Image 1 (tube, one colour):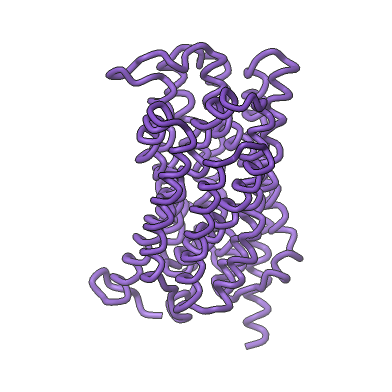
Image 2: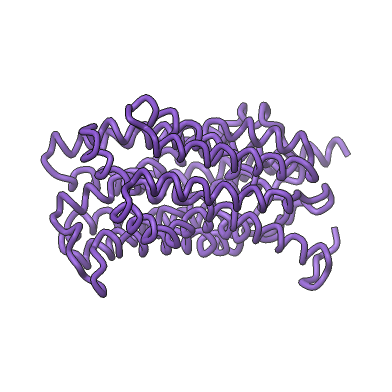
Length: 428
């Protein structure tokens, strides 16, 4: 395939498509990253326990992730012209309906239903945008997926303060209602502009550090590969620690007694932390994604997860003052968010681009599996009397994944790609 000049029509088109994907991801970001703002208001309004409320978060994450393979398969089957448009339009309706349901929820059952509906819609949008990124940019896959995922990580930074102000001024129900309808309307408008690339735009671009499969495996073939399941376990381990921080950041700050402490032009510790965390979470995705394009996925994983282990340890031993909390929490989010660029990229590198939307969706279900480990953080905190043990377990888990990336995943993956290339050469 000829190289794409920056000014060529195809090159301009793929950057336009990438930008639209980033916008879509930013519009659904607050479904996850602003959730912590709603937890305490719902607890005070209805008397539901924190654990009961956090099950809604787990349901959202589960439905957002576990149904993405099916959404991805539909997108792949419908083709580049229709698949992305229909998936984003359907997702717009569902995420809006889910937050409207949350606004009127007077029982945990309705809250859980709203979480499930918005999760399905968010998953369809997420899978479509990531699938588009890995297909349009075989030469810069880590960067493209990183920028797309950055919309999901950093997009909430634009809405954290408005949502918090709406909750304080009009109540959390109105925040659910207004932001749910607003994001649905914009998503529906963007949907008509999206499309995927033609087959010839997806050719692999292997290099010495970055090996890509020349062929493509179906999802069934991928699920039979030990490499996939190793990636899955690694994704679960790192995702669980990050989701714990995402869901529990508000309660953690409250327990440290610093949540409402004003530290920056009248803004509270929690507000500043949420903005900083979302910005760094988003910045990590293209930064580590671009690094992985240059030095390889596994080496980048080792760097990021080692820093993540250090960040959890620092929060445990030094994160009890306002600014220390902001810094330590920011480091955690910066060294966690990159999983959403590294894992889809390495999945497509290994199993090929043709079925990438569905295949990346199957791997993304690991986030759903990890969500059900989030309430265990509350259990461990209750048993030990503090959050320090939770942070230390998260640090140890990240350390184990570093070893898996370097000494198990890398040799297994390279051997699989070599066998695949040898088989294709023999057949040719």
